[in-house]
Length: 280
Image (cartoon, rainbow, N blue to C red; front, side, top):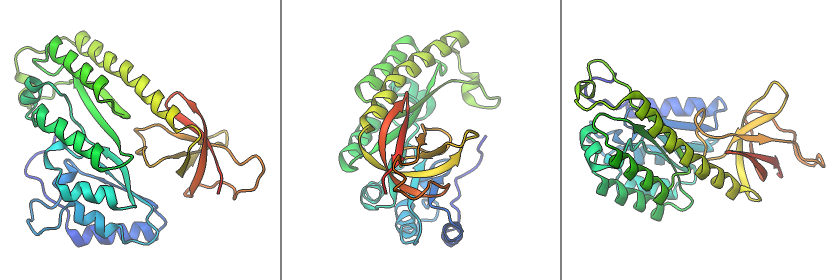
């Protein structure tokens, strides 16, 4: 459990750490905190997340940086512009919404639905090619069936290319654990499963939309069978789909190796994952 006020990591320390990682061969930096887009607000020196990404973008050798765990409360226009215009920032934002029903959001101490919907619309309008990832919690205390169905309809009307759904779990010492109207475990799981089932179709459709396209792939690993695995800029490590890579049939391209950034042709899908081969 997180306790106390947010404290931003010192500016110069972050830049030096990033420089060291890139000089050692790292091609992607993931920016993550308990609430990433609050970075710098405790210092009030004008050096926030947007300014940090701008500085990181100057590092030679850095290919990608991505924002994870950015709550909807603190998105500034400067931050949106930096995501949209900085070529090294992945057009991918992880924004854990938790829910969309106003009554449930109020219980969670989250921004109201109107704020969230306006922000999501602004992000998609101002950041071309943006992929959004979010997470929702099913069965939070007091969540009614109407609240859940409101969330389901929202996911249909505003589909997220990447989405995770989890059941609410009581944590000792948290206010929610003492709330009345705790939702039965089997209901929590059924509501989560409905969201997951809906998301499966969205994820499959997005994967199919990539077939035939040329995309940059970061080669991450190799399986026991010798197959290379990578990610697009729209896939965060460990939580999103993967790209299964094969060598070019005519052997005209450089052999694949872990750590490469390769331009690839997307050949097909494996549910949410895709298959591709290098063309550079």
